[in-house]
Image (cartoon, rainbow, N blue to C red; front, top):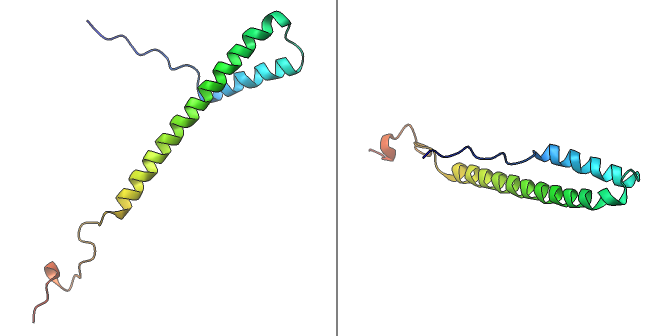
Length: 93
């Protein structure tokens, strides 16, 4: 049995924000009749949740990347701190 393709994750953040703005403009302009209002408010709420999840996910990814960069910066580079005049860091003489 083969695995099916993963379903689309839904709209991108930009698409969701754009649709949310369009819904809000329609509601503010009074273009929505009362029968349509409930559905649009429900859709808008779902879009807000989606946008928040995408923001949280991006924040976690950025935090993970920056923490890794900080750890990498703290690790000594091979050969760092050795005096080239003193092979092996030992003095003779």
